[in-house]
Image 1: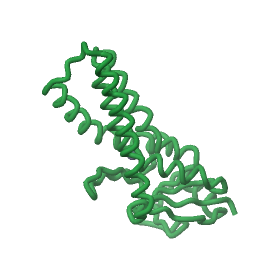
Image 2 (image 1 turned 90 degrees about the horizontal axis):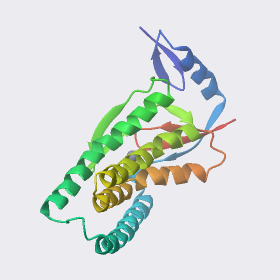
Image 3 (image 1 turned 45 degrees about the vertical axis):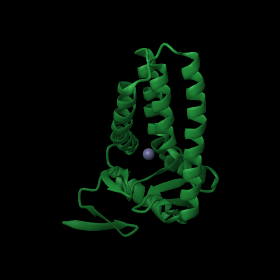
Length: 205
Ligand SMILES: [Zn+2]
């Protein structure tokens, strides 16, 4: 048996208290705007430029470091490790998003993983969080996974490998960084909802 709660969302009759609180909160809020990254060509081009800039900067620094640190052998195995770990980092990135969503929603978010336009993604469509918490979800993999990719190989004696892994991963985080930038430039927005096509910003009415 189901019941209509609010904002045209259906919840089961066993509505957790936090959902009830969310419903009352939503009644006081107004939708500010929808950001649909998947449909925004201009934003996508900015992301590509940002990714290329990070890659370009990272490769230049990496090549200089390679010349300064000749003890790290950059051979076929090195490139295999770079490619393999870069691919492994992708699902880990999405799992960190999912973990952050679950932690910051008190394990109420409905997480879905997908693959579109050659990109893995994590969806918690319908999940709403305060803007700071939503930014934390967006930034969690950028900070945690990039740091792990940089530090762990470094500690194992492969600082160059760590540097390139971190640069490649960071270059793939521009979508998350773009959303954080958009949220930050809308100070009026107090809540952010994950949607099927991107995010929606809300403000207190
Ligand atoms: Zn991400």
